[in-house]
Length: 177
Image (cartoon, rainbow, N blue to C red):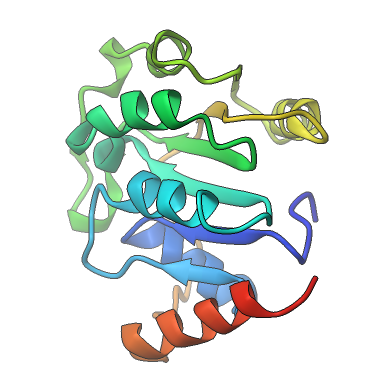
């Protein structure tokens, strides 16, 4: 596991959060159910209010909805933020409608907005290398990961109500590392 158990993880709405829940539900994970486009903003707010590393798992369609948050992250310079954009080129959770991500240079946008580290990859090994380059350095960091569309079989849904997920996430943030 690349992400430390002391890190806070913010997962975008849809299948990203559902997969994270299905693989290993933990108090350190905050699932944005029904809040498309909000992961980077929630991640920024979290990063500005904790000394823990904050990892945002964003999607291309969601990021396109709130491109202005890139500029706000760049301006605020949260040293503990790693913004990971999982780009499959579609809105997978709502039927696979294409996004315009193929024509958007997300890494270039992040760099222009002021992220300190910017990476691009399209493989697990490339992601591992890009994530390692962020470790121990002040951020914000941005990693654009091209992935295939689709999701795991038997995809679950978070069983806790969003308010309960928020409470346990806050308790995680408040607990000593």
